[in-house]
Image (tube, rainbow, N blue to C red; front, side, top):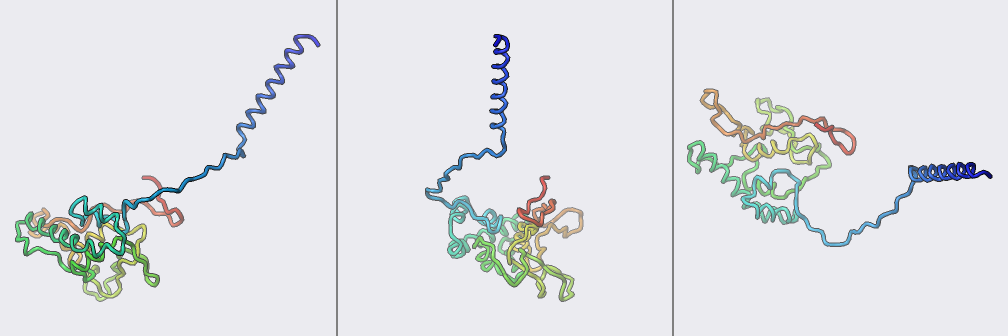
Length: 226
C-alpha cells in the first residue's frame, strides 16, 4: 500500500470512530445512575398555614408567632385563644384612639357568623382547614338574600362558611370581615360618614387585592404567570 493511501485510510477510520462516539453520547436513551436518597435525620416543623394571615395578624410578637407555628393543632386553641383575643381587642383600641373615640366604647362586635370574640379567636387559633363532606367547599359563601332583608352578608339560612377552601376564595378579605366587619360585615369599611368625600372610618374589611389570575381546573391548578 502506498504511504498516502495508508494515511487517508487511517484518517477515515478516526473520523468514523469519532462520529460513532458522538452518537453514543447524544443518544436520548442513556440511563442515568439512580441516586440513593437519604431521608434520615430529624425534621422540624417551622410553619403552619391552614388559614393564611391569622397567625400574622393576631400574634402580638414574633415569639408568639413562632410558638404558634411549631404547635400541634389539638393544642392551639387552648394555648392561643386568649392572646389572640387580647390582640383583637387591642386593634380596636388603636382604631378608637385614631378616631378620637373612647377605647372602652369601641370593641369587637359579634360578626356575621354570630361568633363573639372568644368564640372566633378560639376557632381561628386552630390553624387548620376543616372539611365538610356534605357541604360545598368554601371559606365563606354568603349565599343570597334569602330572607329579603337587603343584607346578603347577614346569615339568613343559605350561607356556607369555613367548610374548606377553594383556590378562588379570598381568604384574607373573609378573615378581615370576620374580625372587623361586625354583625353586618361592613363595620369598618372606609365609610364616609359625613359625606365630605373623605373616609372617616378605617378600611379594615379588605386588603384591596383581588384575584386576577384564571385558576386552572386541572392538576396542578396553576395559573399562567402574570
